[in-house]
Image (tube, rainbow, N blue to C red):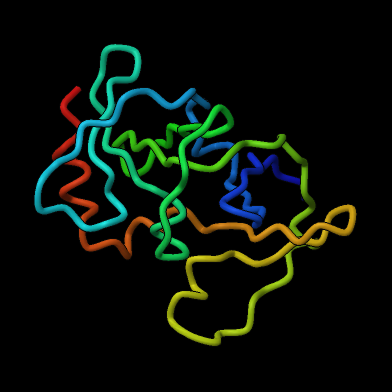
Length: 150
């Protein structure tokens, strides 16, 4: 069975998120920093008149920060009835990927469970994120949800 995935980049790496979790793809707007937040929570931003918590995908996945430029985007995600803006280097495309093409990742460490697996599409390795697992493992999910003011 095929599912659609939003494909995005973080640095030189391609990732995919099931399209069912993506509300919209937005240009990066001003981010207001919040004190005493984990590094991956960049702050809040105003998207279409509503305040959303911003998570930096590079910090979350690689302990680095995304350099904001013209390509940087927010993936507005609907997770557990909270909207979260995941900041990514750029969005590439939407791909239809057969579940059989997604190969599991060997459990090297605890972080491997945040991935559904890896798909090799046109000689590109795309890591498919299990976004619910990823965000449910974050200590600050409740904090991000509390930041969701609208």
